[in-house]
Length: 187
Ligand code: DAT
Ligand code: MG
Image (cartoon, rainbow, N blue to C red; front, side):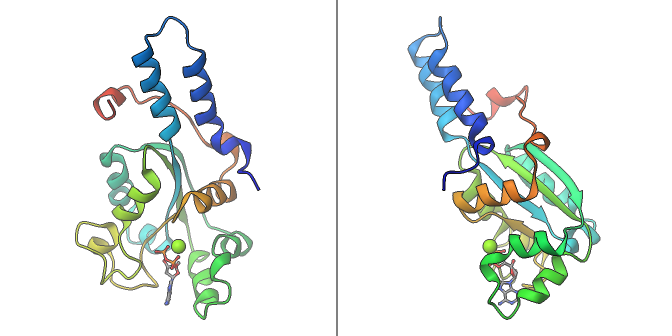
């Protein structure tokens, strides 16, 4: 099925704006189009261990200083239903019930980040699932030791990003905005 309309609303709107813009040079118009068409959003969550250990600012800062744009942010203790949907692909794995218990055990900080290539880049910033195998410099490589306490979640592809953003956030919780220094990040 096609992704829910609101996920791509911003990109579609931006593309339409670029195409319809009058009085702009072709080169500038093409730049606008390129930016609009490469916009991506991903879902990232600081798990209860990250929140309990006081790592919110550290983890959020990795994405902020990288230069991605924060478009959604909230803290909640996930319901069992939400957790089971979120980790639905793992429902037959032996660690599933423990994983659901863990993720529902306390507050989670849920985020949506936007930018070119943000889905794959967030996974790189996060590092390997097993923190002892995660490279130093990554969030898990720097901040965690155990697979069951690996402090952070990030969508693993465009389909899961759409699914997870819409699972965790309402449309009106996503805030589109233009960082005033964006021209110093993206040419
Ligand atoms: P990731 O979180 O890197 O996307 P995943 O989707 O394979 O990893 O698994 C989801 C989470 O489930 C993972 O962050 C930690 C937990 N998990 C995965 N494999 C596990 C295992 N073998 N034992 C215990 N927990 C596991
Ligand atoms: Mg995963």
